[in-house]
Image (cartoon, rainbow, N blue to C red; front, side, top):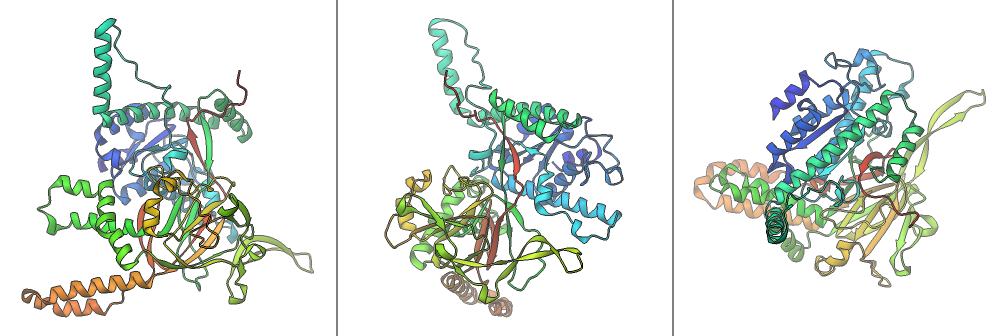
Length: 564
């Protein structure tokens, strides 16, 4: 796999319009890696297939994809790679994997674009320090994305995944004989198809890749001819009307973790959904289960058991053996949160009135916390002094408290789906350039009993004053999170583990090391996740919508306008 990336570094096929990224850690990719690599190479060329397994592989691939034939300014030869051989930038990038693959890949490309821009400014310094590329500007320079969902949850795949319509790209049966032979062959083909689910996924991925390669060629031709953005948009609309494909714009969230006193906040992680609570606790437990199964002390564990515990089955094991018992016995899922926003247009969705929306700040029930000194710098505005000199300065934004209390889950998303088709955020895409923040205060048992309604996005809490589910729609939220019950639980587990160690006489020599370990304080905060990946313990985080959306290719048919 690393050899494939090394080949990509030295040689690229001229005229490559489409890059395909295969994450071998993704669930459906790992089991068919050889077939998918061969298939992708035959479609776009071996030198345009980037195989990744580690973070280092992904970073190298992002660097190579971004820097092919382009720079941050779109054509500065001084910063172009010497081995580009006159290549044009990729017009289409095709990540193949799960939600984490897509979010991580986009984040890696944005980081590389911003780094490339910094390198250019170092070579051509200016007096204006405000020329540093912003996150939304870097997102605007991303190529179009054609996402093929082949991970575990694939929550994003339900919205922006490239799935071929059933009537399109269908394999034609070779049964051409009449009578019983035709029926028998049709029955055998149907049975064989059901038994070869993995092969069907590979075949489908191949058809999608072929279609995306054609689209990539079209996009690159438009760019090469210098067609203006408006003309390209008209072409996309024409393709949509003809039912070929459409371009869907999907906003990202930027997640940052910082202390209240921190002034210079660096770029955060880019993703589509994130949160803390019961779900992040389960992911943290799943992470521990995987680490346990792969520990050197578990060398006797059969490989198929290790593979199972690293798949969606491991999620179930973590849920049943760790997360749910902890939540029911010790209430470890309950977290204390304080949620504020600077978006004065934030809406609260009142389920009792039939999804009636009202302002969540000031008159809508929010409390200003400006008196606590909680102000944030907003967008730049022009300011003229008495001498007529115009300067840029940051507008101060007031922080508004919209909720403070106990909850079981707090999650934010720009996509309706969470994972596995669960429509946890039904209001996420009702407003452009907004995200949905959901605060779930119901118990795990109630949530278990309401799974069908929660799964399809129809669950509403219509009680008069319980407020079991609070939904907000805005563009910027800051959250402080803590859990004394979770910290006490970790402390008890640690003490039990140390007491067991000290009870064994053959480990007395390690007692001094254990004493030093016991002196270290337990982590404060609570497990946090984004894109279905556990990100460790966090005390606070901020989620905000990135102004510039990402452009995705979709094969879904457009809505009907005229029914003849």
